[in-house]
Length: 271
Image 1 (cartoon, rainbow, N blue to C red):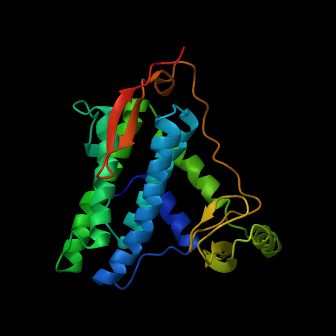
Image 2 (cartoon, one colour):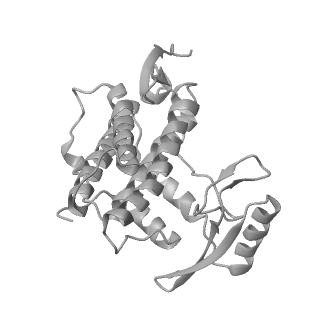
């Protein structure tokens, strides 16, 4: 890379490395699209939750968690495909952008990635394909940073807390990891224990081996890293009473006939 990416990129790269989600070595088009499809689904899932469980119902926790999780998953795309990270320090104060541009930017990036996966958008060489993917991913990161700016969210601090939470999915004690395997078996979720040694430390990673819906009603997709019995939620700093996010007048977004999000109404500020 020609420049140093932000701290959160390196933190999320470490999480992916420990979890076994490594950069691909075979950079032919089929290998690229396979990784892209997996990462797209993760990003899209987090983005949809942020909009529908956060923005649309003014749930500030889901808004904040979702924003952070979109960044975590798109960072994984850059890491696994070896894409150069955008120069976020050059974006300034976003003076000419409305916060809805952030929602649309993420949405448009995901739509283009989906078109690549489906074959609607094709490129003759792997390098050209990676360029188109990078443009789409850059749109998603720009959208995240734009939303964070308008909402007064400290992305760096939130990412440290989210990555600490994600790292708690892994066990360094095998007996504890087996407890996790047993827990998922009771939920009728098929999983496996994969040891991974990083910097001399053995991490035990629990992975879902078959897409299914567990007895807890949750959907588990194949390859997903599952949570240790010692997993903890992110410890995000509390918002003060006059924090911009608490005072923000949220819009409601609904998907149109093409699957794109459109703003349809404005939520009044709650007293």
